[in-house]
Length: 149
Image (cartoon, rainbow, N blue to C red; front, side, top):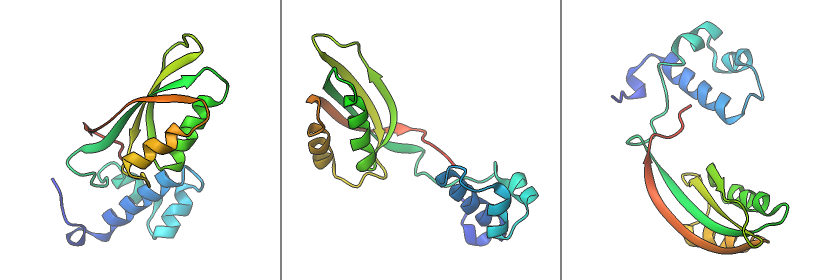
């Protein structure tokens, strides 16, 4: 069920925006500070925080599965993850197989809503990470669920 925010009491929108800000800033300020900033009481926040959440589309998120072959050297996986972060890809899972003959297959599942690069340029970026031997496969798909604030 969706309800337009403009027909609800202001408290719901304030709580929703406050929840989003608290989530985005990762605890860099307290609930008391955020409540003061939004002009609501802490008790109002706690009363409504579980009743509202941002609309995330039809319950699905865009996800990309990336399979790569990495050289078995310190820092290669870290470099790959850093490249994902620079592109705005949110890493959901990492699965690395045991190295064989100096290389390890790694599968990443990344959320793509905030990516700043199209998939072709993202592939080019991760292909240039030192120690990435080759990209084995990249697939885009929709996944039910997703993170909610």
